[in-house]
Image (cartoon, rainbow, N blue to C red; front, side, top):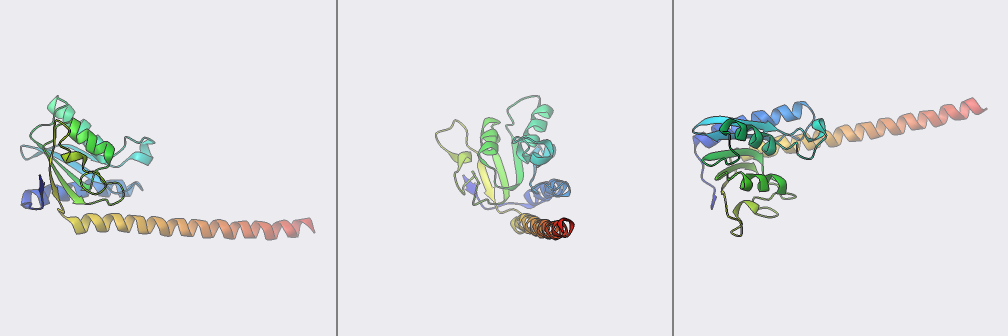
Length: 181
C-alpha cells in the first residue's frame, strides 16, 4: 500500500533522520539518514558511512536495522517504522523486507536507484512473503535540497581540484623547460 498521507509524528521522526543525514555530510558522505521507531521510541539510527568504512554495506538503513535488531534481540522488526531521507536502494529495500519492517517513510525519491517505487518497488512486490506500507514525501523539500546541495558542492570541489591540477601541471611543464636550457 502506498500512502501519501502522514502526520506530525512522521514529520518529527523524519527530522531526526535528517539529523542523521547531516552527520554523514559532516564526514563528506552522501547525506542519507535513517531512524527506526518502535512504540514511539527510536531503537535504531544510522547514516551513510560507505566511503568512511570502505564497505558497500555502509548504508544508513543497514546500520539502523542492525542497531534495531540488537535492541529488539530479534532479526524481525515487526511493529517498527523505518524513516529514511532517500528512497532505499535494492540492497536496503531487500534488508527492510527481510527484517519484516511493516512501514517505511521516505523523504525524497531516487529516480536513478530507488527500489521503493522509482526504478523497482521491492518493498511491495506481491511475490515476496512480506510487503511494507510505503509513505512518500515527508519533508521532501528539505531532504531533496540537502542531497542536491551536497552534490553541487561536490562537483564544485572536483572542478577546483581539476583546475588546480592542470595549473600545477602547466607550472611543472614551464619549470621543466627552464631547467633543461
